[in-house]
Length: 539
Image 1 (cartoon, helix red, strand yellow):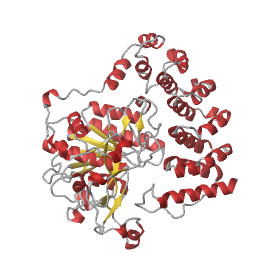
Image 2 (cartoon, rainbow, N blue to C red):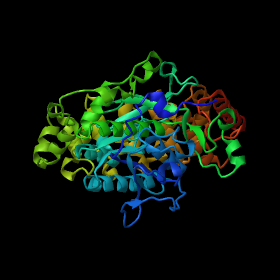
Image 3 (cartoon, rainbow, N blue to C red):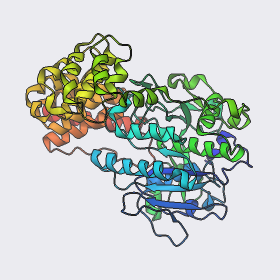
Image 4 (spheres, helix red, strand yellow):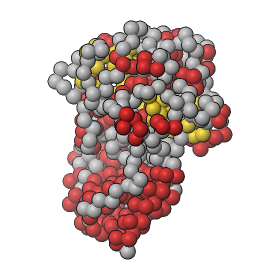
């Protein structure tokens, strides 16, 4: 069958294309495909921020760059020209000028935090010079799943700083439906969840995409807004007919030879940035906050998406009319409270955190991301027993800036706390305290099957790092339940931990195919088979 293209599904007017608007797409790498380098109506630039001299290089048809298909798809969803489909399967803003920010390898947590940090810093330092108005980020979060303060994560801090520079920051909400977030969610970013484009292409028949959702520590609901995240037709440079036939959806579709359906909020988020570019095309003087407000206030709502508590991005945003001169007062108080307290003298901070001051959380978090001063350590440690879970969470997060000062009693207190936020803080701290791993194996074993999905996920991730055989039984015990409840992220962490602990490789049957729906009956049945094999080996 022939699937709707993005612009058709969202009903974006033909005359609004993002022309002249400059936007940035951050990814590990990019594949030079005609849809993102061959467009006479605009220019596309590559910026390799993992190199010593990251300057924009204009891409041409002679450019040779075949490093990452994910980057190709994020760029194409934002502003692909659709050249190889005669313009049919273009991105949302096919005439926007794109800066492809190549961060470099993202294989490990350290890679992500270092290379994405360099990419965001480059944007912060150069956006004004190159007139970049918005950026999309689809990287997986590394510190937690949204249960800790945004100040705990240097990438989230940079997202807030970009927002303060007047840059619209759009991020993917994450693809794991059991998690609050599997992305980089901070208070000011525009987080994007998804809907499934139906076979008939009608918006009212679209189902919700089973992505991440929930309330973060900072009381931000994830996602803010929705866009197509399943059955999104994007360019796919198949190297052979055999490879094309192996794609899960290709043989059932009637699409141009170089296109295929893809899924993920990694493409929903770029779609929203593309729509933002269309808004700037029509209203070039609008600020990032005005564009954000227009997008959020014009969303379409449907009962099918109620669980996501967000609406679908709509071209109705193009018809919003508000007084630009009086509608630019959207400063993020969380960011400014943090900055304000960071500049206060230590003596004043110590006075506030030893009292019942209502700003105690802001004061605590002002120590981040630097190490907590030695003079404040004892006062912060006392707050691990504070009546407020938010204060307890902030306290253990701040103490984690100096792992050597954390005691095993501090960790036990947090890991057995009633609040999942505090337990997350305990796991975060324990990751940094390997000297206590051996003494806390039993506690971690319990957390592997914690009642809270975010905690289970992170405990399984920690188990893979520690590699104790004591974790084998609790890891296996939760496999089948995770598969049946479509907790694919946690299932993946359990499976990885078991492989690292035992050295046993259990292959997926049937094998994973590009484009396959991870929540389909076929996919879930494959996970159930893996769970059965693990149980048969150890029970």
